[in-house]
Image (cartoon, one colour):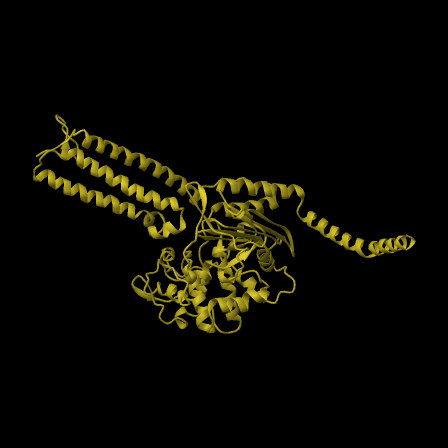
Length: 513
């Protein structure tokens, strides 16, 4: 027993000498974290996130905040898999959408630094077959213009990106631009077109002789230490990938979006909140032991002031929007059919926020901006109308109304037939001619419906809308077509099959001849 007591005394002394200092280090570290983000601020942020996730019906969200060289907050909200009740964590992986562009830009600047390309080079130097036109004449686009989104390539080119997972997907994507008519003279105006960065991705392939993925992984991601950022989904352990969702009839539904490998340089890199914390520190210049040229990172943040600023006063750099009115705050949103992201940071204050989500929602940017404002000012209140949520709600209402119309028409038609209330009447040539004109009028209405996305969404097709907007929109479109044509057919029916003493009506006032 005495020996046991002596042993316990020795162990106690050992623990007091060795373990307690370790515990003290951990506590000091925690105090440092709390000093950077107070408990009150943390509670405000979490309340803000949860309220807006609920408003926007956002299934899952990963948030990371950095201050200087430290990650002061990192947390997952909601689910990466709703059915399995699997929560989002800081390791959960999401497509980061257009925030991929800043990664591609670093690849281009890396090639410039090594002397393999010049930013003022025309793209045809590396892709000779990529001929484009402006006002019917051949035009030249430079690498720099692609970086700054001043190439003149139209936004609507996103609609032509082919669905493909083949090795030649990137080249096939860029080939959709051959002989395209530019919206503006290259270098004159800013016009965001996601495919600009796909062209840059192909330039990387042509110059290096490697695949875009191979070059970026070896020469950008590895030197940056972004070991949990991926270019191929099949490289990912399934337990970490967050399932993508789309709204469908006011609820989230799993959505497997088409594969656009050819759009990877512009929008399909995959990452986590943990790596986004590193990415923010890289952009802020605070990450220690960086094995990548910091000057290249800084160059990607240089605003292009050769064109007019946007309506919000911002300028585009290379994968980033720069806001001079907000102390050169830098940000970018990323949206894919079933994922979205938002990154914002202030180089002056060395503060950055990144938000990743497994749905395409404008609330993701709202949450990111809100967190940033709470850090700056303590509060943030802003209401938005989310395109997807609004479209899903409107589509659901349209479907309900259309169902009522269809059921009503079927009811009255069947009632008339079963009760033998109507009898065929003969009409002359004039009435038949009016019938033909009314049919052509209906075709015109149908064509106008077909043109809706072209008019409202800058020239894209319904196929594009079906991929990007809630599934309910496609169902609503079919119901609208069905109800419109059923109404027309019913009007024709009651005009040709009339009740006794019924003068009859017909679309476009068909009268008995």
